[in-house]
Image (cartoon, rainbow, N blue to C red):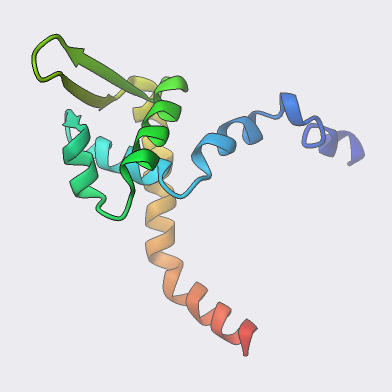
Amino acid sequence: MENNLEKFSITENCPVRGVLDHLGDKWSILVMMVLGEVEKMRFNELNKTIPDISQKMLTVTLRSLEADGLIKRTIFPQVPPKVEYEITERGKSLLFHINNLTNWAIKNMADIKESRKLFNA
């Protein structure tokens, strides 16, 4: 059993940590879900769709997702500049799992809230 657990102790080689470091924040999964619903979206449209995210945090989140190859950023050479974001094939493959997690959360949230209430009582 100890050999099976070693894979979790090597921080720099752990693929789960490597992915969750970027997706485990407050906004990445939500941005992925929004982009998964549309073909393409501009920055301001994303910002309006998720009104409680700051412009700075949206920028940081988009850059992180782009760096991982989960979304694609296209800049159009015009004045004013036009930038569109879309989900990549890699992002679509992750979206399948995000949707499963979302469905699980919807199904279990009432019970989770009740468990938290009992725990805190």
